[in-house]
Image (cartoon, rainbow over all chains, first blue to last red; front, side, top):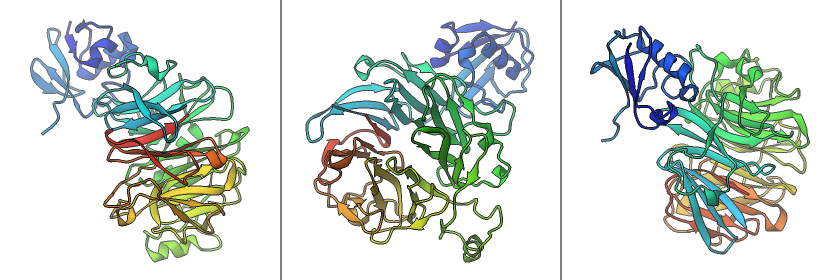
Length: 86
Length: 373
């Protein structure tokens, strides 16, 4: 089952746990499942259009992915706010 | 004692003090986050604040706690996130920002206006919200155009005592009115002249019966209703100050006597429908105060004449900008309190209806909005 790791304020909204094991085939399915388990996350990572917010990056086994990126059963998914600044 | 909620680029500040006396910054919330607007509901004392995280999008939060109990709250700890402030799932648009939150004319009724041209309403004081479908699904919406700040519902003007009547202003989709609690909406733009558009468009607007979609690109900057005479309304337009005496159906320009026709904020005296205040800026291409002098302009005759009020305000090399939500009043009549904040972090106030002014504070982050209670 894929593992998803959340950081910053998202961790608190996800019940305080750093890592969650969720069943999903794509990144978007994974994020929707995370929202279903933790409704307080609704709208924080994915917007109304079903798009990952512009300044949030999702990495699957260290590679940046998007909504449709496949997530294998042993994948490790990191949700990270983008590093911004000069 | 007056409380100011000052929304800034780097958090929400609560200040307290008396006109002309010492002011204290008592609390800061949402540290580091852009807070677009905050208001304390005078009926419940609940504070509603909206912030637009560059990472996580726009969110509305509420708290029952007085500012003295906010402590050193980091981010939104201790605040309840309001639910339902979102566009319909699966559409082609996402909520960009909430610009304003305003109490309505029924118990628990609140409104929130935002970008893209969206109005939300709450029946429980701001805990849960739903989109106003009448405005969201209006058949002219595909022709609405955004202003420089986006397609924003920035002005919400309830009708005192009647929750069915409401007016809103949208940049740049003009003025809208409802008489049935928001189920249906009609325009109220007759007389507004968008001098920034080509002459042929203006000529079309001035026809006895203009085409139905002729008045979509109307960049209203701020709109207020005079509570003592609700059919009287004022607008600071993108080029001109206007007054309506027929509840916002038609408008007459009243800006003669002002140093420019451009600006954003506008305030009214709730006791006197002839009194209004604006803060002109040089022009759309130079959004600072004329001559580097900080002056609020006041009319006491419904816009027939205007007088500068700058006693106590910087009068040399003060190139300030005041945004549309950063101008607020408390009370009425001769002791009307007026406050405004600048994008350079100053907050100024008057406790005598603009006759004299004092500095409230000077080193805040850029001020987005001010509310007073």
